[in-house]
Image (cartoon, rainbow, N blue to C red; front, side, top):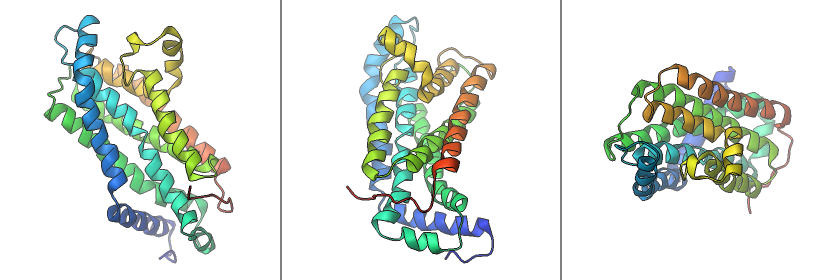
Length: 262
């Protein structure tokens, strides 16, 4: 499978192997897609009251619950990315992969691609639900949500590949990816509007990538802002992704031993 001539073929072979694995056991992907839909329904009524008290008398609540939930759960895709690496160690196939004529960068690209594509599909589906089911009304151009969403996908990949490179066990990665994402998302105002958070949380929120993704979305959706309002959030999210890639470049090693089972 990995004896193809080009790096593209080798990365593609790894990607197809992971696509087949995810397709054979899609439960994790289904959960991280269905949960945010339920959370939108749960948060919309309370967010409606908060937004109307904040000066948006026509708000339905989905303007906060939609993008907030989407940003919060987007980072959960890192668990799927981590599993694609750590399961190789659990199944004892990592040494065989190391012995194959494939470079570390090809493994990173090949095993990252399915998670990135599923992340984009998840984000698109959640936006369709927000607009189609809960009638989200966007004051700005809907098209501006596309570069924001693409930048968010880059940031989640960077977060995930950095964790894969730094964590030795699947348990470490799961703790950092799930409770860590919840904590950072909470600080950013994805669960409750940022205005309702304590002062110390509002001070810390700009240091999270989730804050910038949510800020970009809300500037477009609630305030009707134009392209200029999403430039900074997009650049910061892309830089988060690049920073994660740099961590992988310096820390990801094929000879590192990892524990893929609890």
